[in-house]
Length: 129
Image (tube, rainbow, N blue to C red):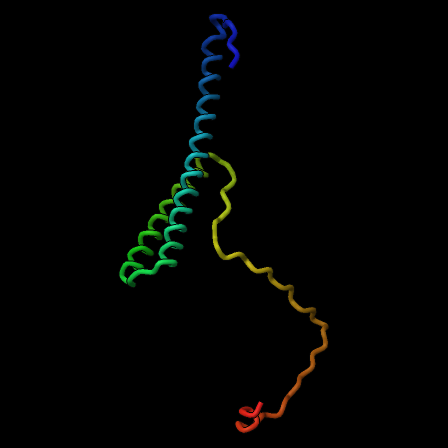
């Protein structure tokens, strides 16, 4: 950081600007830390769930673990949303295991349709095939 001698009239305004700049930088860094902590917490929860699936446990323990993970994830999401609001940055991408499948476009209206009616097979025919 560069320091220059300040005149007595410019000193208070320069100091205010410097304090404002440092406060903005600090807030930005705090938001990044909160986001990072949220992601780390989410990954730990996922890791614990995967370990649990791998090694198994009784159903009562599974239910308790699931409730704990749900609470942890709710807290993480709330803190992440709060940090995003304070920082004013774009939200982090959701960390879902399930990816969305591409959706098909609807068929055109003018497409010709053909109705086929096939004869029903008897139960004897079904068993022989």
